[in-house]
Image 1: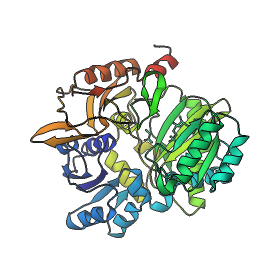
Image 2 (image 1 turned 180 degrees about the horizontal axis):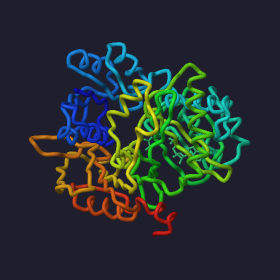
Image 3 (image 1 turned 135 degrees about the horizontal axis):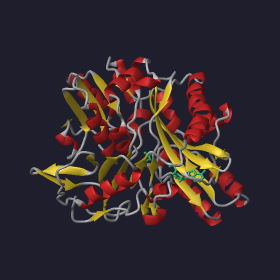
Image 4 (image 1 turned 45 degrees about the horizontal axis):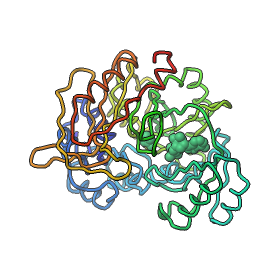
Amino acid sequence: MKILVVGGGGREHAIIKSLKKNASVETVYALPGNGGIAADAECFPVKATDIEGILRFAAEHPVDFAVVAPDDPLVLGCVNKLEAMGIPCFGPHAEAAVIEGSKVFSKQLMKKYGIPTADSETFDDAEAAVAYLKTAEYPAVIKADGLALGKGVIIAQDFAEAERAVREIMCDKVFGSSGNRILVEEFLTGPEVSVLSFTDGKTIVPMVSSMDHKRAMDGDKGLNTGGMGTVAPNPYYTDAVARECMERIFRPTVSAMNAEGRPFKGCLYFGLMLTPKGPKVIEYNCRFGDPETQVVLPLLESDLLTIMQAVHDGTLSPDMVRFKKGAACCVVLASEGYPQKYETGYPITMPALSSGEEIFVAGAKREDGVLKTSGGRVLGAVATAKTLKEAVRGAYSLAGKISFANAYMRTDIGKRALACLGED
Ligand code: AMP
Ligand code: GLY
């Protein structure tokens, strides 16, 4: 089979490596892929947001199945259009991807169908939002409605910060039209859990849970990033919590999307907070998480392509999705200065991999046969092991053998999870 994967980060590298475990996969095309992915797929310089370019590529190449991984092409209807050409896809149609594409939509969905989430108010007028924020409780959470490269959430400690955020989002349009509407949300507390799930619109099968580390610096300090590391499973997500989430959040979300005439097929990502009042939804994503995928897929025992085809065909069943017992850890190596200013173009040296080790490349290009840094998050060093403690040790040991000039990583990925297990 020839498979097209849209996207070019560490998540896509992990997806491609998993797909290739299926012997029927002869070729993977990656649009655009990256210098590291080029070792595993044929990469073509078509941006994931260039829907016309993707369609042209698909018309000119024999593609048996396509996986659209990032949020933007999903929200832009890439799957609708590829399927209209007769190419079966993994990923939601635009009508369902709106669950991530509009936070106002997803909040209204949760309110209408009684799915637990933070209380909130919606505004399409900056002055009304500012007036409301004068008497709001702090911290208050301000969210731009649309996609904002993971930067559209501001936790304001006081009115001055909140007002600044509203003016930047709604008046200065720092996130473009994504800031035409905002949500002002109640500040919740508790451990965060990411749960990725497969759903064909009828059956929903959660994958192993994970924990992201979004802040740039140790101790969860510094700016929010795309994710500096992950562990799986997330020890806060006990079997009892999992059962509660299935009953009160996962199944109700799938039913709600059907009731709205927007059946969701693909990977539905639940960003949850385990609050003192029970698990609540912080966000939905219409796709695999990055870097959650880098720890979840190495633990998948079943065949990814078979699951993805079943999701497309509407024949998904829970027994198709099995995970290994152990744990995984991903430590992201970034360019010093990320997520703000950083330099790229430095040669990367990587060791030979032992069993249980993986390197998923995110921001690198190949120049004159040399792999060089080209982005903020450069790669993820991943280890799987029987226990979380060994996985964390393994990921750091692997990360220590990778080098490029201005490499930066957090030194405490997994620390909180190990503390939860009493193993720190
Ligand atoms: P998001 O981009 O929606 O994932 O939000 C980014 C981060 O903001 C989340 O991972 C949370 O840590 C935090 N956050 C979002 N909403 C809330 C909330 N209502 N209360 C507390 N923290 C939140
Ligand atoms: N790691 C968070 C996300 O993929 O949105």
